[in-house]
Length: 123
Figure 1 (cartoon, rainbow, N blue to C red):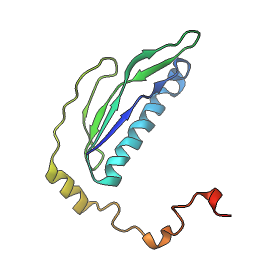
Figure 2: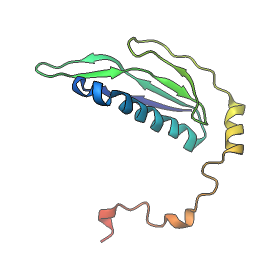
Figure 3: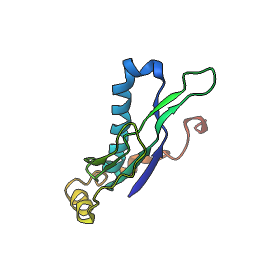
């Protein structure tokens, strides 16, 4: 299982225009970590509104969740309160997904030469 703690949310001025798409993108990338690694991912996110003096602050959107190895959300927390999220994790599900959806099996590792170097290092 991967645990992925986050502290992400909206700037209040962006919420109406971009809120749904921002949260969807955040959830999609977290679910993709589960798929790519063939494991459960537990994503923890803050709730509440942190407002510094003189600023709008950040409204954390909560919705911590657990995704299975195929990216299916098996449990999700609320948007507005601290809580403990409990979800069922099945070890046979990991084996099943890795057997029938071998996401990384067909990688062309021979094509990865130089991937460990940054673009700026390629002088």
